[in-house]
Image 1 (spheres, helix red, strand yellow):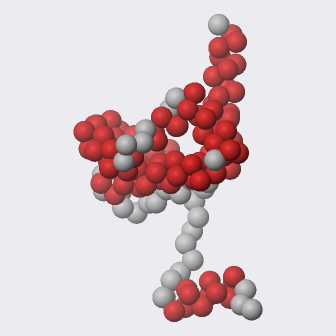
Image 2 (cartoon, rainbow, N blue to C red; image 1 turned 180 degrees about the horizontal axis):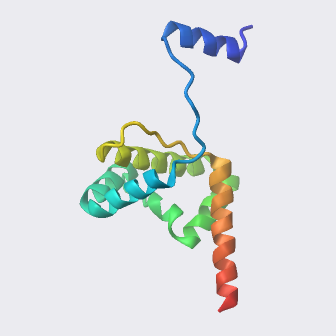
Image 3 (spheres, helix red, strand yellow; image 1 turned 180 degrees about the vertical axis):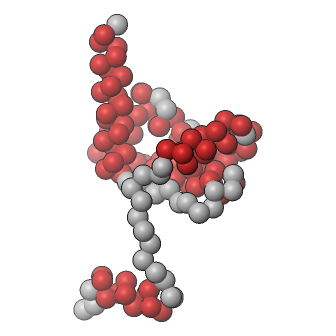
Length: 132
């Protein structure tokens, strides 16, 4: 039986692939640039969102607290739905990068990091509400 590492090495050699460098986070300047371009081109962003979403409001899961909670719960109750939303967000972000000329970057969301960040955001917003 062939191991995973042996298989990866064979495929890398066969297709002349080189190991990629994994960057855990984009620099803030790249994210600022992407955000700015998205704000400057709302029609294009809307078009990409509609194309990727195919009738599903997947972006709400990353901007609305109620939907964030649903996404976190979905990870436990509906793993296929969770990954569908996650992959649509990746496709959306990567399509925006390509559309706006940032072709040297690809976004891949790590589910564990994403869940932790969403939980932190919700905890922070809950603490802010307690202060009111």
